[in-house]
Length: 68
Length: 510
Image 1 (tube, rainbow over the protein chains, first blue to last red):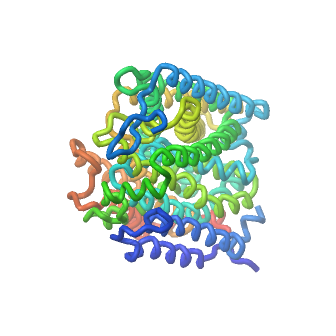
Image 2 (image 1 turned 135 degrees about the horizontal axis):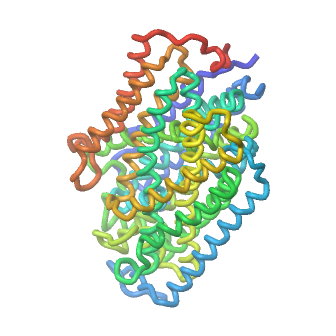
Image 3 (image 1 turned 90 degrees about the horizontal axis):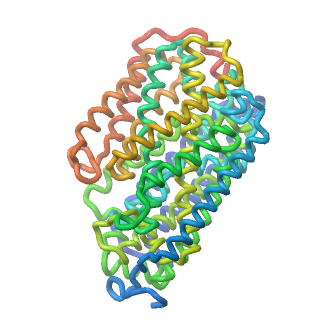
């Protein structure tokens, strides 16, 4: 039976947050495809967040929501 | 130069707005506003005449409309005008401040809070978050305190839209010299919003938001390609920027950037406490509608913020500070033709009104359900009377915001940040009410008072401050203090007060 509240999405969120504050993305003026690398990196985080949420909706959807 | 005068450092300069272009822009804007009104009024055809239908569309909204409505509601003048303005001043880091931080945080807030609120709303018949808090903690006074705090915080947030509409129309039509006075644009935004919100309620608001979100996402993409093509394309524009304003393309160039980034990561928390997002959550037909929202919300934020940040940065290639109007509007007017400029101007209005309508509707719902029904009328209020009170208060609040917009002189971004700070501070209280059985009425009340007290203290401290205020000039914004303080007080006071009885019906685990 599915759980009512899942906690692993919080771990996924923590990983995204760590990536958000990644110091490697700081203080450089490098470009990728004509766009500042840090902007490309943070755009990638948006896409990663979408994938994580896709996994959350597939694997951590609380059972009680669909029972109404 | 293709009709463009010589600009800064050999790049094409902005064109001045002539009467013919001005007329074209105004024609497109008027046509757009008419279309918005038509879509909004069309929603009224399905109106069932009940309070629940007016405030939450009888909980019938599907996934696509819910997604675009939530995105549109969360995009304001703050996004279109404020973000581009901040990117003009601070550069690429603004994308992390408002784009990627929201793309990461907001879906999790919808997942943990939005779905739970939807479930409770459907189960217990709530249409406002104050009903939930009153019921959960069995305290009418707590609900009234929350109502007052939310209304006070909402006023500057609504002002963003009303003032943004006036500023945008003024700048689009020529600016300080011969542009349309800002109050005309503000009045127009209020009037159009008033029409479809009061007539059709949540269904009209959702339909219009869906339409407007589509418009401003398309428009920001069009603006991105058309305007940057005048600077030789994205790559050439960014290269020019690196040569002339290198600090704008470096992430974290300012010494205080790290603390500022930490502070801005707290700001999306406000979405968990917004009354207008709460009513949209409750309008969902099924929990499954949230799945689409969760997956696509980060991508929508990327699509909207990416071009706007780059456009704001590229604005430095064309306009030297200080600016006499929003940078996005100055780029639109200076670098696009009349028809496209009109469409882009309509996109700015779309972003503004897609929030203003939901905010007005939510306040109308709160006034009707949490004040009028709670004090005095209770179940004697007919469905028609509920709708009438909702309409009256939405109209009154729009009128108040319009009057205030005539006197407000702070930048749109600063106004927005203060409002969002207060709402983010309320999130720990809402989260505790949904997930922590041991949380108490005293804890919730203390948390609300802490937020109000700290907010007022920092706001008073910021008065007369030039630029974005931070604590002691460190880069740390008040939000980074208010949110942890609110969470700490909620926890501590709850543990020190008597546990509430009979909370099982609020927890699906039971």
